Image (spheres, one colour):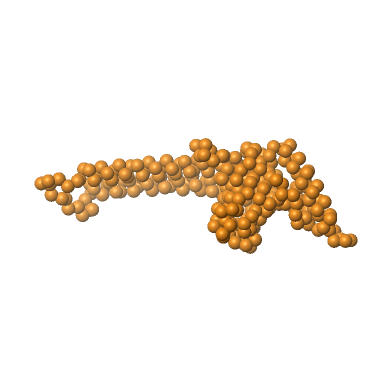
Length: 247
């Protein structure tokens, strides 16, 4: 249902949507029931000429059941919601499937920087590809991301993936995703991080294997050239500090 409003493009986005739908249906049903009872009581016990108001202590057994029974049922539904939320939370936040590729995500006021390991699939080598405000991934591949912040608290939010994770200064968070649909999707910061917070957006480009391989080859060559040119004389090549923006 939610994918009609926001694209659903990761392996666990459907599970998150089902959890939201479950909570909406349960809470919505109880809200409607409470409002119906509320207005029925107002109508049923409205003031009438010649009818004295009742004095109710709240201890009457026949009246207490109208509180105790719904209260018990609500607790049962709470357990259902908690069980469903824990299942999804463990899958998304506590489980870390083996990775096909690992990328770095650096947040700062007010931009995103992404580091792809390049064709050798090893971070920290000369063919690493660094891009700003545009992240390229391959559909169907399991990705780990190493999330950091250079300054304040940010939040890495990809609505189409139903993925959101805070980035705290001084910490590296490891998360995962697996894209299921090619396309271009929004990356947002979901934590107020300063005056430029509203402008801190980026694009996630999910590509087919062929398109992603072509992108890797093109930008890895640029990264290797830049690394070689910036290497100190007589020394090993320095790590590439910049590359094509990938746009």
